Length: 605
Image 1 (cartoon, rainbow, N blue to C red):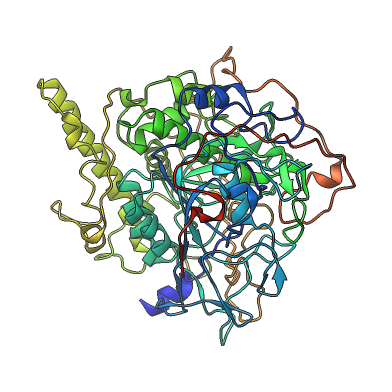
Image 2 (cartoon, one colour; image 1 turned 30 degrees about the horizontal axis):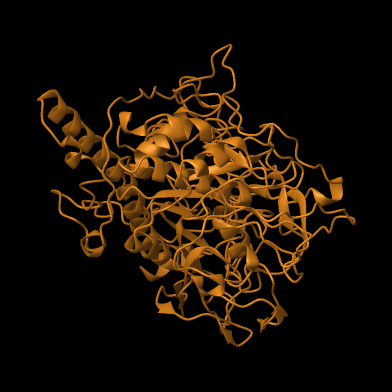
């Protein structure tokens, strides 16, 4: 396993586009139309709060860079802070230090850490868009407001971002290929903790040893939200997934960024077949500098922000529909976009996925009518089977094909990818049992569903693998029924994979032969560039029908438009010109119970 590990060990997060410190607010919030907080300050979110739908009782894991725990925007939030898991070049668990200082679960504002005095961070900003309260260090400047302010959050710190770049700083090591974050172990932490939604506003490489952890999360119905890179380099031509990166791992909801009016952000306007849903990241509140005290301005938050906003919306939906499984919530998400009208209709140009998220539909359409099968996983497994270079990805067996699929010039898809196909088959078989139970007039038929019976991943004869046997099962039960028919994909040619850029603000990872001298991306050495001949998107999948009108839009105001120099995603450090700031009227928040000021979180080191 050692040599294969060397080929796949790259696995760290490249922080995605970005966000600002925000507020968490369940009741009416006063905010200016142009202050960049419209993803949460809109009629749909405000009405949800009035009904008590504010994220209460829902667990959300945020796997990101180290947060500033006493940032005012998080002062009302219920957050547990935990240090992520790291591994060395041989795959053994180890610690991470940066410039001689050990990585910790969180830091304090203004204290010198890793050579700088931080007041915000990428991780802080992502937390803000989920549970932020709208406060800021400076009273006359607004802070970010999260749509699910009462959610229970686990922050898993995986690194420290390089200032001015979307990459993590590399851990101290005797060689540059040394210590990296461990995405599989960090996902295990989220599942053990009982997360319903996991937010990864980043991208990074997967090792063969990580696959089982991600498949295990899918089997337990955890909704994994990630994002594509903030660039216009084309991605794959179809929704086939790519298990070599966590933002394109099958079953993950990969997000692209749009404006309040549903227009693609300039940094997201490109073809990428693995985009599933559009969410809001353009013309939103953003920090200008992590070292400044609350210098927030309206600009391009990028796909990082879009992913965090979508996570907050799914958190509200999980509270609204407690009987729904994660798979059923994803079914509702892609069926009931602003162009879906109840059916999963994918953009034939492969720019917009299944469409723009429709929070109003997520909160009004009962998802338990849908089958407990991850629809993105289903689409990707079926689509990959139609392409000659991908048809065997998800049917591999390590007993007969231990070396995986691919050439020496490329990064092979390891044999562990076969777990993905077997998990899809397990979910389908489980749903057939649910349907048969209902046809027979049985009761509590959802006990046969994939989520309720999680534990048989990667095994034969229904036995759970060692990992799933040891996992704490926090399954969510739910009712459901109808399913939508997936159509066969047309004939395929190979697909173009231009740098599966980790979902974030800038850059993408290039897959080349590893060299010690190469600059690390987000704490990991550069990967390889995968290129295959482009294929035409399948024309046999559901396509938009004439006259499909967009659904309800949550907010009618227009966000403030900043000069072009400020419209760059987080991490590009293009400082906008001086701007006037709207007064930050403090939102009226409900009284939190047991969380006051900086006493809100537990720090695990």
